[in-house]
Amino acid sequence: MELELTSLRKKLTAALVLEKHLQEDLKKTEEHLAMEKAKADSRTQNMKFLKDKSEDFKFRIKAAEEQLSASGMDPSLTHQSLVSLSEKLSELKQQTVPLKKKLESYLDLTPNPSLARVKIEEAKRELNALEAEFSSKVDMMALSVPEPSKRRFT
Image 1 (cartoon, rainbow, N blue to C red):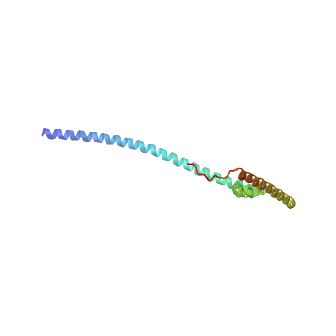
Image 2 (image 1 turned 135 degrees about the vertical axis):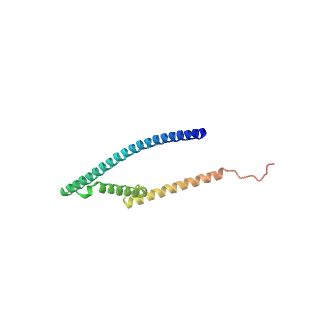
Image 3 (image 1 turned 60 degrees about the vertical axis):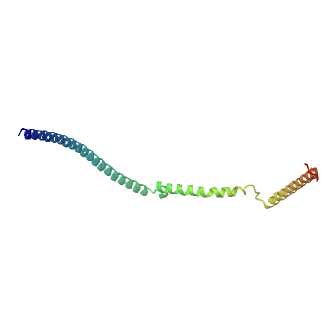
């Protein structure tokens, strides 16, 4: 019987300790829940405030747009249209880069056709002079190179 009593005391002690731990865990959980609920309430209030502010801004924007329209503002001066025009401008600039490079080769040409013919004739004379000089140098080299001997070196 004493053994049973000791066994029951141990079980009762273990149950009491377990109950104490469970109560502590419950208390911590309730505290944590209260903190999370406070955070959620704060976030809900913040979200409501931001929604109200957003609605207010929408109303103000609409009123400002109506006021600008009534005063005769040109729609092409709005931010959105200016951004669109800026994008188109940058696209056109990108398209002109290869065209400018192609045009550079023609910039040194004279606008007068007769002057262009004169330049062509000058270039032909210069080419003929260079060919004659080249030909004479090749002839000089051919004369200065000795003919190979027919003897073999051993």
